[in-house]
Length: 270
Image 1 (tube, rainbow, N blue to C red):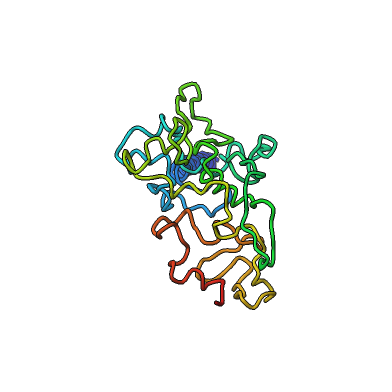
Image 2: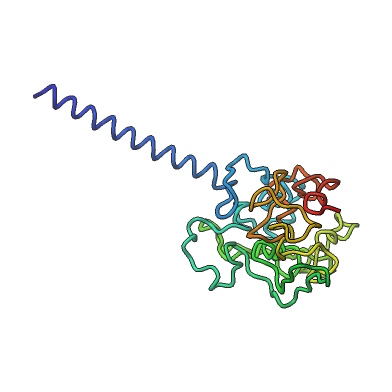
C-alpha cells in the first residue's frame, strides 16, 4: 500500500507540473501572438506577420520613421497593431454593428452615402455602396475619420491618458489632417494615400466578378471561388480593394498581390 500511495503522489505531482507547464506555455503563446496575430478575419501569422514594422503597423511607426511626433500625438498608440482593423478577442462576442462598426471589423463605418462609385454602361454588375471589406480600407483612406478611430480599444489601454489628435489621412492643411505636416515639404506628401470619397476614377469595387461561370468572355474564369492561383482574390463573388492589395504583404509595391505588369491580365483577357 505504501508503494501504491507513493506512486499515486508521484503521478499527481507530475500531472500538476504538466498542467502548470501547459498554462505557462499557453500564456507565452498569447503574449507572443497578441502583438502580431490577425485576430478576426485573416489567417493568424503570429509574430512573423510581415505587417509588423510596415506602414500599417501604427504601433511601430516611431521605430520605423525614427520620430516621436505621431503615436500619442497624431493618433493613439494602442500597443497592438491588429486592433486598428481587427476586433480584440476580449470583445469578440460584442455587438459591434450596434455600435456603428463595419461588419466584422473594429472600425467605424464611414458614411456610405458619400461615396461616388465608378459607373459605366459596360459594367455587368453595379453596386450602390462598397462592401464591408472595402469599407475597411476606405475607413482610413477616404480621409474622413482618424486612423485610430476603432470601436474597441484593448483593455490595457488607458483612455484617461489619451491626448491624441486622431488625425486623418487627408491632404488638407488643418490640425485634424495628416496633410498639416505631410505636405511634401515638412514630411513626405500624404496626398497619394488619400483616396477620398469620389471613387469614379478608381478601379470599380464591390461589383460581382464578371468572369464567374464564364458570363463574360472578356474576363478569365477564376481557379477557385476564392480567386486565382497567383493570389488575386475574389470575396463572395465580388471584386474588392483586397482583391488586388494585400495589406499583410508590404514587400510588394503598393501592397499588390501580383506584379503590376501582370495584375490586369489576371482577370482581363484583353
